[in-house]
Image (cartoon, rainbow over all chains, first blue to last red; front, side):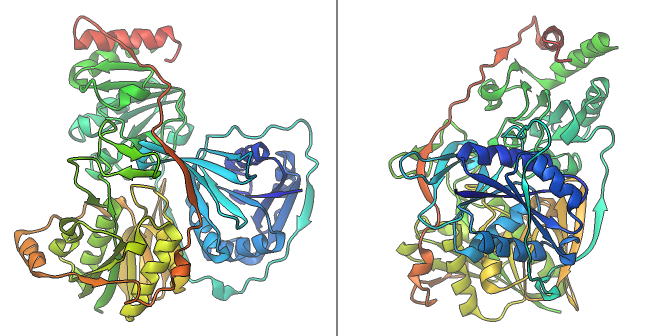
Amino acid sequence: MVEILVLGEHNGNKLDSITAELVSAGRSLGGVICVALLGKDLEGLAAEAAAIGADKVYVIEHPLLGGPSIDARVEAFEQVCRQTSPKVVLIGKTLVDRDIAPRVALRLGVGLTQECIEVRTDAETGRVLAVRPVYGGNALATVTFPDRDPQMAVIRGAVYEPYQTDGPGTGELVQIEVDLDPSVTKVRHVETVRQEAKRVRLEDASIIVSGGRGLGGPEPFKALEELAGLLDGAVGASRAATDAGWIDHSYQVGLTGKTVTPDLYIMIGISGASQHMAGCSGAKHIVAVNRDEDANIFKEATFGVVGDWNKVLPSFIETVRELVG
Amino acid sequence: MPVDMIVCVKQVIDPETPASAFRIDAEAKQAVPPPGVPPVLNGFDENAVEAALRLKDSAGGRVTVLSVGADFTNDVMKKPLSMGADELVLLKDPAFANLDSFATAHALAAAIEKMGRYDLVLCGRQASDWDNAQVPLGLAEILGLPCMTVAQHVEVVEAGVIVHRALTDGYEVVEADLPALVTVSNELGEPRYPTLRGIMAAGRKTPEVWSVSDVGLDLALLEPRIIVDELEVPVSERVCEFIQGEDEADAGRQLALRLREEKLI
């Protein structure tokens, strides 16, 4: 049976939801789903991984994997791939794993596809076909791999539903030994500085009000804050607005910013460049206010108002206040 | 301490190209340069040039810009020189058309090995065409360098390089010995504009052009590891319901009422 290796993502205590999403992606390809967990003291996480539908859970424990070292994880995951010879490797798009994937692929001499939104099996060749947006979403590429395995794909978050299982998992736990020397760590972690969001975390918000280049300056973000406050939501921004210094970079939604999946995403003065849409296309409903009726965003929006936000927004906020107040 | 820097850059189709002007050649499975829209330097690569120039401003040193491709637009490639970089090396050969990420990394690595001495290799975090973010990581692996990605701050000190990596909710401080490779993100800040003096100085400089044989590159390393099976323009499924009113203010009011009707607020 063909093995599909999933790199499990976790924070030491809990699996990230992307792991169950990768199990779903793997199931769609067919094969034995093996979830690899790197870390130390993984007992609880291994049981959790077995419960989300993994056929096998590879438990890779090492003191060096307990820390923040990406170098150690690269070295360990390379060894796991060599020992288990999977046909396919699926990795989630996270800041750390997006670094690990190319380094391991290069070491193994195989191909890798980033930013995937779908993987499927080519009925004719049996090879993996990976679908991904390119040129900022202006085009969609289907990529395949020449005859070398593993075929590696990094999959975007929130495109697959997390895999659901009934009852406790039956996944078999397999310990894998890796040989790691402290000298593999070339990059030393000094500290992590967290800047906490004010109200609701963008990633958790069910309503987001986002502003872009069309706002023209930092001042209008106060109105967006007010609206977000009324709706118990969060404020977001396009890269144009954060690069201009109107609002902190931590508010950026987009390909290189945060990926959000709210029920309602309200965009004010954002043209809808695909760089931005990559971060919010998982929103259930998109509302756009933009002066340009040909703006890209109206191709993606559920509801739209063509007009000057200066005139549209005050009455919109006022009516919202009456409705929710 | 003066820092010897190599900045790897790429010429790309302008990412601001409107969808209506964007063209693909479905048979060749490639994007076609849109008519009337000149190519640009990849945005994150300009951030990398800026990071290098800031280090040069504070510590002194030398900035060499390197690119690989089958063809270049001279004005685009000279932009880093007009911003203040010292030298431009173009690795140019018909064999470099449509390289995949790892083939590009091998070509760049061959050129960097030929250059020999360097302290820091800087790259943009990813390119706006395919957004792979694979070339710099592959390059670091080939050259055996410590690799630090998505930098918003780069500092060279006695003991090596200190990098602040942009996180979604803050930043991570990491350090490594030199030589090292750093990829730079837009959080670093806007790249400087070329000055008139810079543009004139760049005009007088001739890029160094190297071919496959100049850098002694084994062509087998350029073998593709991924193949584009299909390239298409996607169709959007959403149909926008335009909310209208007596005037723009009324439209804002109607929008709120409509969202309420749909129980979205």
